[in-house]
Image (cartoon, rainbow, N blue to C red; front, side, top):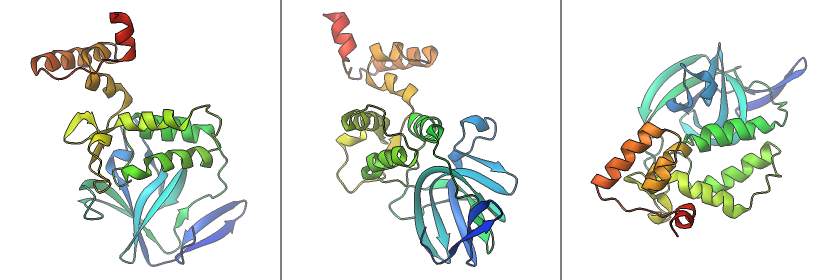
Length: 247
């Protein structure tokens, strides 16, 4: 983090990155939080600190910066507000929880972060990818590099997964926001980087076919989806397992 408004300091056995500018506003997507079920949230309040994954935009003295650090860390804040807005014209308007840091507040409370497989498995993969919570401010073309960077940053480099497998996962969870039954890759043109909608893994079966739908996790919801698919005469995408059973 080579910014002139950040300074590394030592407090006993703890090393922190301190904000030394006038004012810093950190914009966290509101859906990072789940105060009723904090165990499934991507960010949570800890008194005067926020614990979050480092994927967000922040503003210092009217200038915007993006942080793509796929690790969990804490920062200190002085004030908080909520704001619905577009950070950039090409971004969709979403609700943010805006945390204000003043001079002397910790931008990173403790930089001595131990590599932990949970950072990748429980946080990045399960909460962000699995629940469709990657912020829409992340460009579609950055989805694969972000995934690979998260693996490297957390020390998870031996999943025995090919790049094709990872790309297949991402290709399925990123959907056309105007028609979630259609993968976003089919309408991506290199210019519409943020026109996607992510869906959680458990939502995918009902988007493909009646067969995969009734095999899904949420039986009641999947049955309703199957009935609606039939009534609306929506196309069926035949899965390899369905082909095997049928023939």
